[in-house]
Structures are given as C-alpha cells and as structure tokens.
Amino acid sequence: MTDERYARQTMLPEIGPEGQRRLLDASVLIVGLGGLGSPAALYLTGAGVGRIGLADADVVSRSNLQRQVLYTEAQIGLPKVEAARERLAALSSHTCFDCYPEGLTERNARQLIGACDLVIDCCDNFPTRYLIDDTCRACGKPWIHGSIGEFYGQVGLINHLRGRHYADLYPDREALCARPRTAAGVLGAVPGVIGTLEASEAVKLLAGFGELLDGRLLTIDLRTLQTEIIAY
Image 1 (cartoon, rainbow, N blue to C red):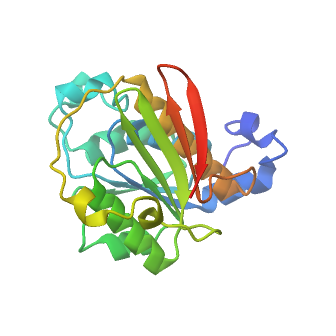
Image 2 (spheres, rainbow, N blue to C red):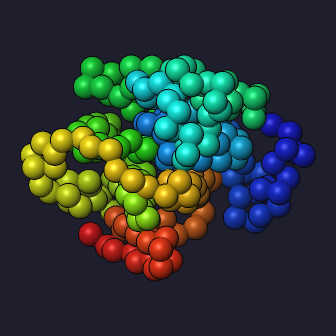
C-alpha cells in the first residue's frame, strides 16, 4: 500500500490509515460483471480492496458497451471475467483477482461466498439473487443488492446486523424465479449510479464508518431524481 495512491481517501477521518488497511485485508465477491458490476469493480479496485472475486459466465457483446463501461470494442467476444481482470489489473497492482468464468452456481456458491467477506450482487435475475441470499445466510455473510430497469434503480444491504433477508423483501420466490428472462431498455447511466452506490456501501461496511442501508432499500428514479429509503 502506498501513501500517495490512497492519500485522498486516507485523509478522510472516517477512513484514515486504519480504514485503508481494512480495505486491503478485505475480500469481495462480485456476482455479475455487466452494467452494475462494471462501476462496482472499478471503484472497489480503485479504493484498494485487497482481493476481488469476479463471477460471470457471459462474454462481452457489442450491445453491452452502451452501459458496461469496463469493456472496449477490442474485447468483444472475450469472457467477461478475462476482459474485466485485464482492465482492473491495469488499474491496480495492489489487488488480487480471482476469476470464476462459470459464474455463481449451486455447485460453487458455498465455496465462493464462504471465502469472502462481502458479496456484491450485480446480476440480472431472481434465481441468482435467491441463491446469494440462501448462501449468505448459511455462511453468515452480508451482501449488497443492486438492480435496475429503464430509468430506475435500487440498492440495499442484506443479511447484516438487522438480520433482514432478500426473501423478506421479495417473498414471492417461486413466481419471481419462474419469470422468463427478457431484454429490456435501460439508460446507460442508471447502472453506473447504482453500481457506484453499491461500491460506496461496500467501502463503508469494510472500512467501518457511515450509516449503512442495513435492512433498508434505497430507490432512485433518474427521470425525476426522486429518491426514497424503504425499511423492510
């Protein structure tokens, strides 16, 4: 860890050298490296998180580039974990990256989540979110949820001190998991905002400062800039 690299962060009394050491010692698993995962991964790497797991089974496509700012046109067709690791490693030599090109699955969830301090949900489907919820509950790990659609997004901290779970927020598991996956429109900046908020919550949690969205859901509509925090 270099003093110069993180100087603008360590000069904040809420973080300081001790908070920066906590970040360096932390391990975070990012599930999904799309629109949400792109800013989340960039800002957590920039903040100095010591180990980041990258889980995604997809490849970079041209239609991703409108919102998935982690990638370039030259990386179209590459596995996202490979393309993301290349970009993130160029940003910071202080972070270790573990790549999981199979994504998060029923088979590997317990191992991957059990080995990290915090999970960041950047996926785009209900079955994976419930898998994260079940596994984090079994392993006693907190996780940060983010989701988006059109001009709208939401973020919250789950399975932390208040003991709230995703199933408390969305109890209709069977119906939600049965929904077909369909492509929908989204303003490119929306996942940028939500993914950045996820990274901010992660830094606060890992460094040990601030008021967290523990058992609460922050929603924002970028058309109107209206926000709301909902306790559940």
